[in-house]
Image (cartoon, rainbow, N blue to C red; front, side, top):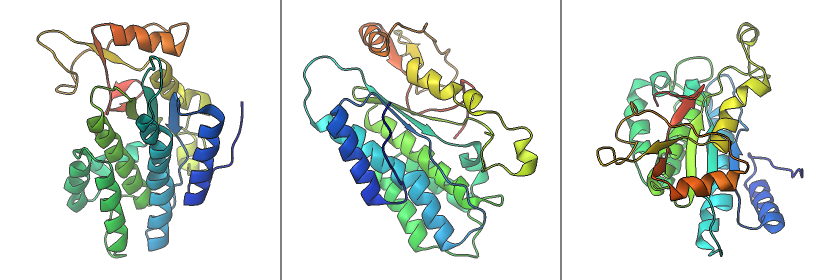
Length: 263
């Protein structure tokens, strides 16, 4: 195991991290889990900027550097799609966002280019108004940033709907026992191992759906039954066996406890 310094609040740190990783491991990144985040109370321009940088802009910059840019480099042999897991939050569900912004966030997720979401969020920063309630609760910009991360997840899935290059999903681990929790929340929070179960599941056994003549894709309905395959001896063997089978990866979804939840 190797450790590299990374500060998502610093663009240069992100670039240095990506250069170091690709230098040591090449362009064949198999898994990227965007887990780091901040949850800050209040609604000021500085809180908004820091929340969006660390929770949205930084993770997307990593996705660009480690996954998207790597697809432009031709590699020999058969490679499974990379897996991108964005650790989100239930507070990023659109029901927590101010009603005037809900439609805007929904539209962001329907764009094929994730840069649309980045530009929209930056405009939101430029037009910051301290009198607007951007989201419900004491940490509105945590909700806004997680809704933004969800929108990027959806956009990325539209950019590569057949998962030729990557599979991308968002996951809500629930209340986790970290410094983010208030005393009343902490009593019901789960430990890191329990919280990581969905992430491990999506990393090792990403869900698939069988394709039939009547059902050509999973994206048209969330009622289709998810096929959960047994754990393979290796991740690559699992990917390649699925690639050769009559199955399609499930991508661009929001998960909690291995169940789909609404954006």
